[in-house]
Length: 202
Picture 1 (cartoon, rainbow, N blue to C red):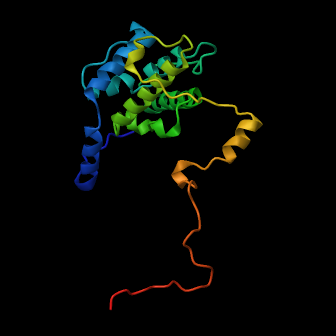
Picture 2: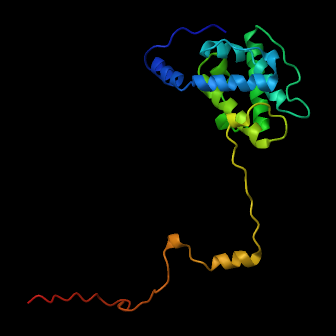
Picture 3: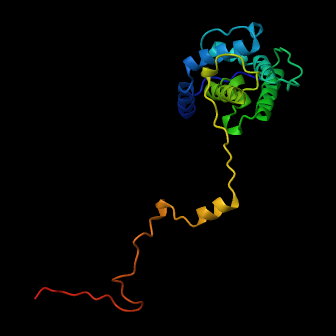
């Protein structure tokens, strides 16, 4: 795949806005977590956005990461470093498929070109943040690193009510609907009769 030249006009403006979303501090935190999670064998990226992209670009580190979060069968069996573009992109796709099966929503997923071509590395950061948060929330013993690096996701708190409790709730008028206390029809005119407007002024 040929490298694309610089963007101009509106494309350049859009790319500039996307680039501003990239968080340097988050890069350091995610790097620290990936190394803690996978071990020193994954190496260390050069500081800065291009170095971080090159570290993740071939998909090997990402595949090691998702495998390290699986206690049973590893979702990606063969991880192979390759200089060929299509092989690298294939491994990134394998990571994305495995991440989706792990529980990452489609809205939190980056596209292969976001990483491989460096189109939107902030989206890559969002995906890895979502992955870390899910791993901390699961608390199944596979997460390694400081749990405070990620927020725990909210967990469903399902409640069971008896039939009596449900029937009791049906007879209550919620306060957002107003109240029926003190309601009466005093002073109301009968249906079909005109309102009496009295003018007391002489």
